[in-house]
Image (cartoon, rainbow, N blue to C red; front, side):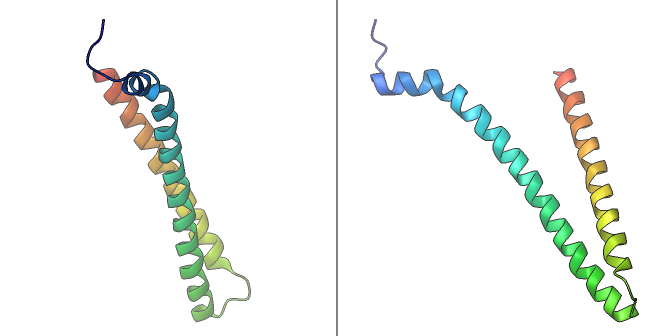
Length: 91
C-alpha cells in the first residue's frame, strides 16, 4: 500500500520521536543550567559591589547572595517538578 508519502517522509516520521524527545530533554536541562549560571554570575557581581561599598575584609556578601540564589533556585526547581507531576496525574 502506498499512502502518498515518500520513503524519506516515512523514515522521518517513524524515527523522529526517537531523535526529538532526547533533544527536548537536552534543551530543557541546558536552559536550567544557563539560568543557574546566569543567576550565580549576577549574584557574584552584586555581592562584589556590596562588599566594596561596605568595605568588608572578606567577600561575605558574595557568599551570602550566591548561597541565597542557589537555594532559591533549588526551591523553584522543586516546585516546578511537583507541579509537572501533578499536571501529568490530572491528565
